[in-house]
Length: 251
Image 1 (cartoon, helix red, strand yellow):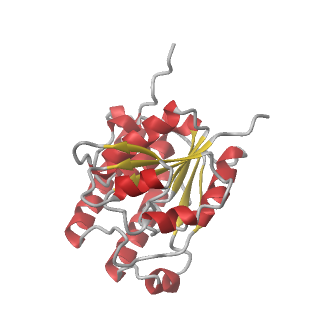
Image 2 (tube, helix red, strand yellow):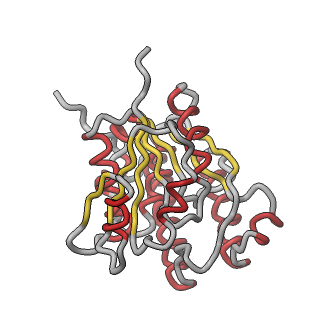
C-alpha cells in the first residue's frame, strides 16, 4: 500500500510567540507538510511561518476560527492529504501526538480522532483549565455522549485528526465561521456514523495560549446545545437540516 500523505494544518491568529515551539515539537518525519492559515494576524505570524518553511495562506480579513478551518481543510485536500491533523499553533496542545493521531486514521482504526484533556480532574485543573470551563466541559461532554451514543473523553478539544473520507463526507463548508464549528463537525460526524476515538493530551493554559472569555464560552455552549437539538429533531424524522446531509459525490 502507498504511504498515506499526512498534512498538519494550523489555524493561526497572532501566534508569533508560540509558533516555533509548537512546530519544534512535531516529531521529524511524522507529516509530509505543515500548512498555516493566518486569519489576518496583527503580529509577525506570517513572516515567521514563511521563515520556518511552512506553506502559508493568509486571509485579507478575519474570518473567524471556523472560517479559518474551512480554508485549512480545503487547501489540505487540494494538496492530496489522506490524513489531516488540526493543531493549534499556540502551544496549547502537545504536537508530539501528531504521529499517534495520524496512525489511528492511517491504519483505518478511526475516521476522526480528538485529543482529550480530561484524563483526570486534577490534571485538567493543575494544567490551568479554569474551573468553570472544566465544569462546562464535563457537563456538555456527558450530555453530548448520551444523546449521540458516542463515548469521547472530551467534545471540546482543538486537537483533531481527520481521514480524507471524513472531510469529503461531512458537510463542514456550511458550518459556522465561529467557535461552534468544532461542535457542529463532531455532531455531524456522529450523525453520519463516522468512527471516532480520542487520545489523552496534556492540559496547557498559559498567557500566550488562546482562550475565549466567559461570555464567549456561554455563547459557544448554547450554540452547541442548539446543534444537538437539531440532531435530535433530524434523528426523530421531524425536521431535516442541510447541516447533516453528506456531501454530494462528484460525478
